[in-house]
Image (cartoon, rainbow, N blue to C red):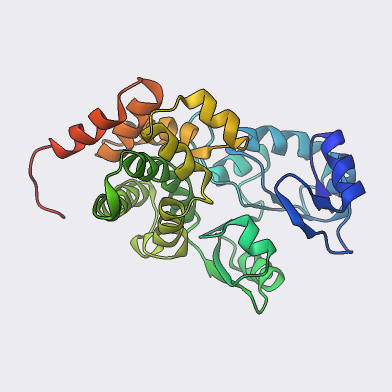
Length: 305
């Protein structure tokens, strides 16, 4: 059962049996029902998979809570970002709204929706502190075209999925300025270094960041124009305004909010994240994108690691 908060949108999905706006060529499988009634969706199954923007994650859980049994509930999410209220990770939000023992898992990795829907080969990571829950989700998701790996490092997977969106905006800006493949490769590599510094400080594992939910997702979103964050940065680098780009894309651009949350976390934990900082200044302080690149290049010379 697929739930959405907008009754008109859900009625259109039910009528067309497809999402006309985003995936007009992909029909829903017969076994999928759709509803705008959250209680109906909550009572349908003890397993709930959220795919809402990060800024709506907590409110959706709060709205869900009266309709579920806390003893039976299992929560998974494909949301990538931080809780904008305080910069906390999303598994911490689940624990706050429900309990520390509520089975919780994140699905993350290099996955463009259109390619998944078209049944093109894809691999993801499912991370949970409850190994049995991760295994259950992997069994549900796994198919001959969709490979699901499991992990216990929920922190590392969450950080990788959130921060890569910021770096995708940065990569788009660099390409929009016409800087080419050399710049993009350097930015991705040094961006991964930033993700690792923050993620390890927060409790993530280094090996996670060179896996699907780290390097894999970062390469995907920094190099392909199916990425909303990359397209947003590309247009910024070409001199367009933030508002006009967002209106044209018409979907959530998670990297905008994540840039603010990531920089706050970096400062709180005294982590050096220069690419993230310059991206933040472009987004929130109207720094010229070319000046941001020059600021990065003008930094003091140092050892790579």
